[in-house]
Image (cartoon, rainbow, N blue to C red):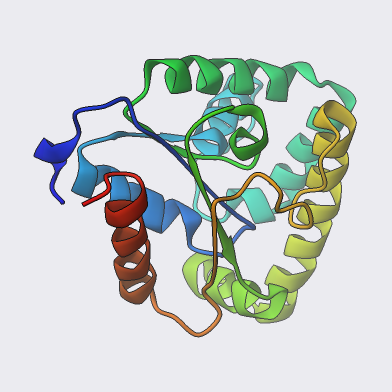
Length: 196
């Protein structure tokens, strides 16, 4: 299936906790199928920069500044609500891949994928990606996820990483590399979304 095959309005949501590989696979899927790629995390990062945070450096989300912004988001729901409104509008237009923690619960239609990976594996990936120690990465993940879960449970009533009700396909990526994950997901999308 190539990007020329996109004829109907397609919405694909890719979810997974930090370090699960969701952004990597979502970008590849967008390119393969000729869909627009939109990241909720990138949209939040733009807001962080507007608020004066130095959010452009690698590993920012897992650092002290990222945690400060996360706590600020917990006190002011408008950040997340603004991003989610924009993402929902893009979903209404279709032909988009949404790399987001909230969209699988908020978008009514679409094909929703969750990538499941242990915290330990995700921490190893983040440590390598951001050039930080494993323990630092693991601790940052735990803190970030605790605050993020609280934000979304308060805003929308779902438990991130525990409630899998909206997902059409859940893939355990623990022992898979990104190429293997991409191949499996493409096979599923070709058969289910494009019915080829």
